[in-house]
Image (cartoon, rainbow, N blue to C red; front, side, top):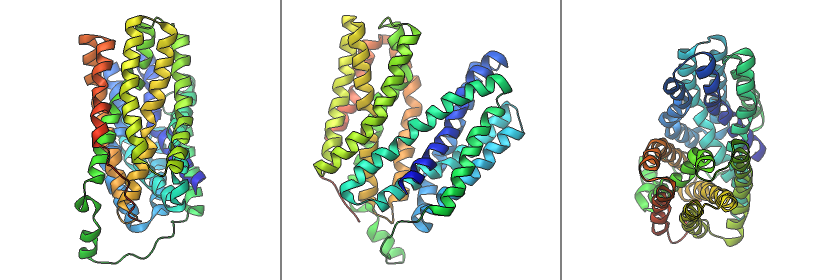
Length: 384
């Protein structure tokens, strides 16, 4: 179940990430303005934002198997449409539709992991599942630009099409919905078990996750140019640092997940991660001011690792607190808030850097995770 969950999330992410790696071909070879190429790259993410909660609610009602396999089947059709009907508009439309379908894997694959693993091993399992996103981005990064340069943008979508199609079939065949006790029925039961009405835990975790998106996307968006412009690295060295940070950060999610199992608490570790995220952003600013190239590289790697460490913790906490009847919708709300916040980080932090420079901008970004620390709930909630 874990392997299929990782495969589903990886294939969906590969499709969603693919248009971003078409930008060089669209801009330099086909003459499409950079702004239009950038809009194309965001089309799948926009589609996901509109459907995450709906897919989650559907998974709550009918289970994970058909949500994952059906969503990936629809993603495959959208990707196939982008292949057989080439053109900028076609890529945008099918990217939007495919992103809306691929959102099914974000919520349902998380439910599979939460449902099949006991609480004392769930953090580790979710940490492994969270590696699916960098896996998917890596697949797109390694295949899409070269294929697009050789055969055109439409051909670059063939691998994501095939990957989504294969995983859709495997999911339909082998995913089994986790065993859960039969719930009571009726509107009164739904109202009584609504975790959003029974306390503030989920609202607080959602708010914390939105705040922690700020340092994460600041580093992923502006880290490369910061290392080159302010830390004085050449493009090869800076690229190596960014790539290494992604790999170590992905492994760090597993370590943090296993740590939360041993600690017996997600929220206590989440609070520590939020505080560390603020500290590491300030550390990056200090290395910039001191103009220490090696220290800047180390600070970037450490900050990158810390900035993604919260994802699995928060995701698992949301699923555990919401319970099997609400976890799909809650996970959809969790991802929706993160995507919406991430969409504003680029322009906002970019304008901030242009106005005050990297060191002060990093210090101001550190306010977001610092504000998240008191919002983290005092104790975990398990609604299972």
